[in-house]
Structures are given as structure tokens and as C-alpha cells.
Length: 407
Image 1 (tube, rainbow, N blue to C red):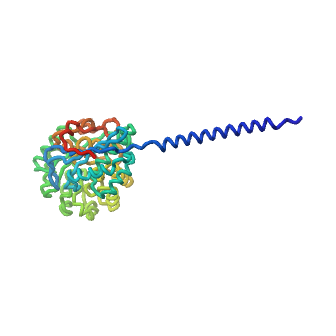
Image 2: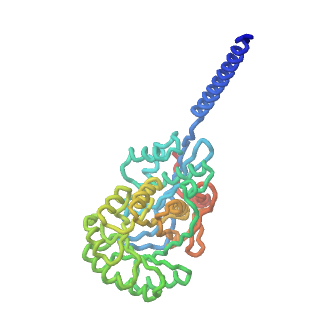
Image 3: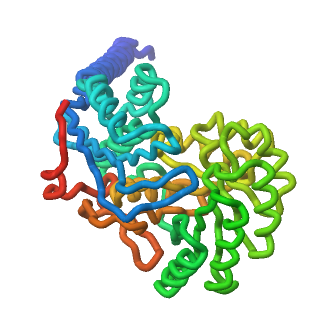
């Protein structure tokens, strides 16, 4: 007996029709979703506040000059979604070449360039600033920091988590500015009594007196305390080789930047012959410097500072070059308040190759603390808050006394 094919045709027709409807519904849903994503308004920068963020302090002496106050600048970038970011830089004219005045002048230009643009596209925003001005890394670092603060707040993460990091134990050193051997030794003893285990000694004046300074400090603090040196470009090649040879017996961890940067061509020779390991500081501003120094075997370690790198974005590139080549790094600073130091520590927590920490600047004689929240010290052990972003704000009462501009 023959069965009719009509029911089977009807079933196939309904089956195909169902799949067609399902496909069209799916296409419509995807199109609607794409339309929503495309039409979603990007965050925009509305305006920027700029502050002359001067911090009174005790005079701080290094080989290239003396700082009588912290020449800092604060920027606060505001967006149309109610999120604002904080960024701070500390001008150190005798090292980087920027003053507080040049930072303020460039901040006004940079703020105008960024107005109306997406703060979450940090590489593009920093490229905007680079396209306008080739250098000025110190003031650029304040804008970079504020943009990262916005991005981390938008992601509802503390900055170290946003950067892919996690908490670990961080111990900072304590720096001794240049003074007489007796005065430096006495200050070192005071720091050790307060729990300090790592002393960083500023040198770079008359080489024989520098040797006497280190000898006096080592005798005063004993053999258990770690000693680091920083000549801040103060020595010639011959003086550097003499000093490093003489100082080896004092068990020195490393020496930062023994010579002027114009002697960088002699760094490989000094690095090979020095009995003390070298750390490049003023010779390393960006990741191309890092690559050049490493490839020429001019240094053992690198010192990363936002005031040189232009902020976190470029600092990450320096760290990556160092990591690929097995070169350990230090995170350093100028004379920033706890606001910028907090951002420094967030960055370090996300960089496993940063193993040395020089984050003592606000302990070096700042006479006021213009920051609410942020990094905390338990002795010389450091920690950052787990609030979104950097987790630090400028004290509004302090800001009322600061010159300010809105762009």
C-alpha cells in the first residue's frame, strides 16, 4: 500500500520555516546588540584642574643641587560619567630639566588637547601628548597617572589589580642626603633605631669625602644593615672607579648612576671593572634606553621613575624589556607626596621584576602631608588601599591654598 508524500512535505516545510524564523530572529538580536554597542557613548574628558602643589620641606642635598621645597604639580581630570582621576608629578630641574613652572605651562596645553577625548584609551591619549611635545616626561606622568586612576575606577578595581598585580611584602629604603660624614652617620643611626633595614646614601661630591661618609655610616650602623649608594652623576670615570674599588669592603648592595649621562659610552667599561654592581638611573628614561643599556652591558640594574618615563604606560615597557633580559629593577621617585607614591607602589605590585623599592620621598622632610587615603607606612613596610583606582585624594583644605587653573 502506497503512503502519501504530502504529510512528509508539510513537516519538512514547517521544519525549514522554523529554522528560517529562528535564524532571522538571531540575526535581528545580533544586529540590535551591535547597534547598542556601537551607539554606546564613550566616556569623555570634560575638563582638567591643575594645581601648584608645592610642599614645604627641609632642604634635601644631592650631587647636582639642593631642593628647598617639593616642586610638585597636581592634575585632576574630570569626565562626563562622574569619574575623576588624580595625577601628581614632582619636578626635579637639575635631573630631568623640568621646573614647576614649565610643568604648569605644559599642563594647560595638555589639558586642552585631551578635552572631549576618551580617557580610557590611554595609549592614544599619551600619543596625543607625544605628538604635541617630544619630551616633558615629568608633567606627562601626572596626566598618565590620572588616566590610569580613571580607568581603574571605571573597572571598579584598585590600580594594582587593574594592572594585573597582587599584594606582596614591600620594604622601602631610607635615603640620606649629602652632609658631613658625622651628620649622615647620626641620621643613619636614627633611622635604624626606627626600624629601617636599608639605607640609601647620596654621594657624588669630593670622592675622598664620599669614601669617608660611607665608612662612617657603616661603622655607625653595623654590618647587618643593607647599604646602597647613589652618586647622582657626581663622579668622573676615574673617580667612580676609585670610589667603587675603595667602597667594596663596606659590603655595598649597588651604586646608582656614578657618572654623568654624557659618559654613557664609558658605562660598559665601568660596569665590567667595578667590584660593586651598578644601577642606571638618569641614563634610563624610556624602554629604548633600557634596551641600549642592557645590550651594551652597561648596567646590572635599572631604576624606573615616572618623572623620567612619562608615567605608568612607558614604565611598563621598561619593565618588560628588563624582564625579557633578566635585569632586575627598582621603583624610585623624586619628591612626590603620598598620592604619587601610592601610584608608584600600585605599579610595582604589578611588576614581578621590580624587586628594589625607593619610596621614601615623603619621609625625607616633607613638613605637611597634603593627601587623604593612599599608601600607608608600618615602619618601613608599605601597603596600598583596596579601593578603586589609586585610592588617594588631595586634601581639599590644602588645595584651597594652592594656585589653580581649570581647562
